[in-house]
Length: 409
Image (cartoon, rainbow, N blue to C red; front, side, top):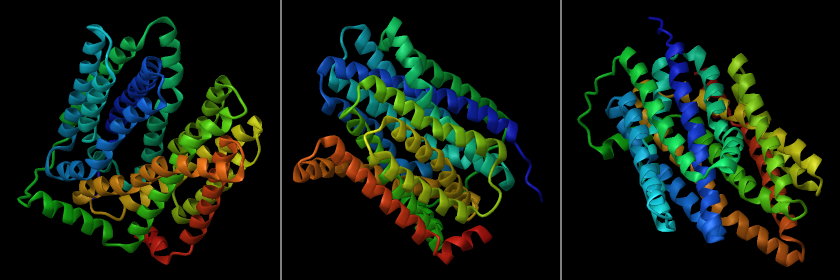
């Protein structure tokens, strides 16, 4: 029996998540500026970022189990609605005086804990709503929503901070949470939840999710590739700024970051309109190789035009790679186990960020000290080495027959 398409419901759900992503970007930008102005410490900013990231990473697997045991749309509503509690706490602290660093850390931690419910439930809901032919197009749309917090939010936040302060950004973000809950409730009303007959324990559910992931060796290889990608992306995120600031102003840095990140938006729009229909393995290998080449070009010279060109190319290739990874995994795991599977996949693939955040800066400083060069060129060296390794990963990936078998189903 042919599955009924619910693409209009997906678009409503996606619209809510897009608005929520923009609101989250406003808060992230505003709190970063607020913490730096109050403490003058980059370490304090990093602590806030870490506490906002770790709960989502560590709780992604348990959230995946919940997504398969309970109503996925209800979990999304709970995650969005309750995550506003942390922001309300920060806002109240600011309205009654100045929010201290520990209070901001508590607030973002609480918000992140509840937000962790969203990702597995959202991805599994996309599978529930759409037909296999629509997966690729939907993945491009999801990428657009994800990139909005990096492209749209900083511009809006900067303009609003010029006429107000961070409290306005928090209020707007809290309102976007409520709007997202409403959109999800409308979608939930039109789709009946699949009753769960599971009586197994969380441990057994984890095991089932792991079994679903490791059932095909090609999926394990793709998860490793995803972790490698996030490691290199994390290295780019933390090392691009010192590399550019070593010879340019912060104003030029901001413009360069916007230009580079817009590559992700452009390719996401292309994929959202046209979709990808075949040769996912080949496109994945090619996009990763081009992204690695772009990293080498990005860090090759202290030339802002070259940096913007290759940075744009790097981010342009990422949605193609993500789209192919998403499709190959989604079509090779049965729908009833997708929540648990995506929870584990999200956890394993994002370990790369932790590796990058913990090591890339230290390695670049050591290279700069050993070679007696500026920190910027030390960062550039790490980026170029990472690019070469990514090219090697892409070449190796193209030779795995088990990955190509995933495309054949």
